[in-house]
Length: 445
Image (cartoon, rainbow, N blue to C red; front, side, top):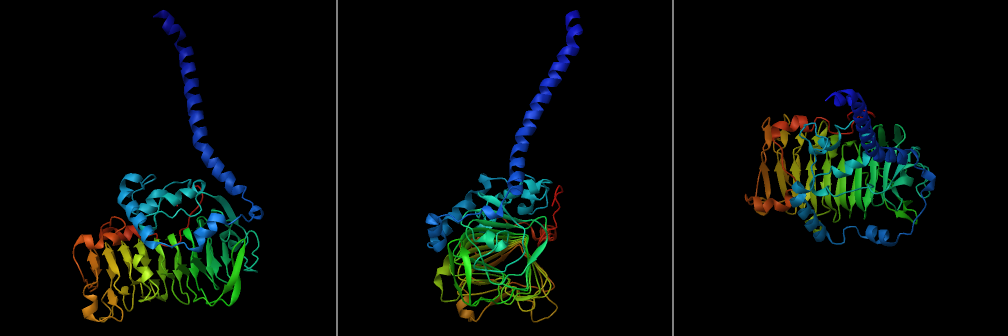
């Protein structure tokens, strides 16, 4: 016993030294991926983005939705398995918004930007964007030459063949001369800065796949066209007149539009047409616009029958008139949105779309003739009575009402169900931060 008492300080010192060594090793292992990601951003060289052979990428971009039925089946299987595949609440701070709870509570979000790609929900949840590529830092807001874009510009970044996670060096207003033609596997991530795409052309997602657009202010978009525009390092072509949409999705799949503020464009704020599918539109703030969102090209374009779109956690705000969204064919899950303004109607459609409205809050305008949430566009009552439109758990305020139709069975809405709806009583909290966020480095966003 005397020997133990005599040497116990030495053993204590050795034990403390051992524990310190283990802690240092653990911290080093934890910091290594953070440092790697930080250095990757800091060392990103815009001038080193050399063209690659298009090869398989060219085939992938040429016809991104060649078989929409296959894509729909893949998305359905993914959604069925989602509850066992991953836990969205890794950094959960309990807001009830599963996307935001996945990343916003992490004060080091700027060192782990690409984790955003693991936070998607709904039909577009498999969009990886540029997760598997390098960072590209946009340092120049200019757009002098749409055919030969300058390195460091947003246009130069989005046309590259390789996956890229695109961030911005500083606040900027980008006025595009012509449509911003995106290439596949790109993320535009404006967190931490104030980036506006305004007063010119806006974003076109055409015949591509795996796009994430996050954190932009998109407004005052204008018709442009009748000009040459580059869409890859090896190709440019003639573009006819564009309508002036904020974001135009054309024949594309696996698209996620999250936490953007959109307003006052010449045509739609977001349009998805021509066989596009596997799309999520979430956490956006829409204001001051007439025809907000069009999903489906025309009543006669039957390839849109496979379209699946999730509209979740958005705020449809002041100055809006109609089309939130306006649907054709396809399957549409409208879940946990806040509708505070419309003048004509909120949700419309034609050509037998399936519309599944769950857990939304609908606040009708004062106009006694505009209380109805829904509108069947240019369709006789005898035709639309069999369409599957339902309201489940929605909160109707100020006389708002939803006109349902079709089957009441849940099985009829299987292909229009993409996530579990929260209670409509939570809408105020879930959508309180819709739109582009004001994030600061080193703090929870």
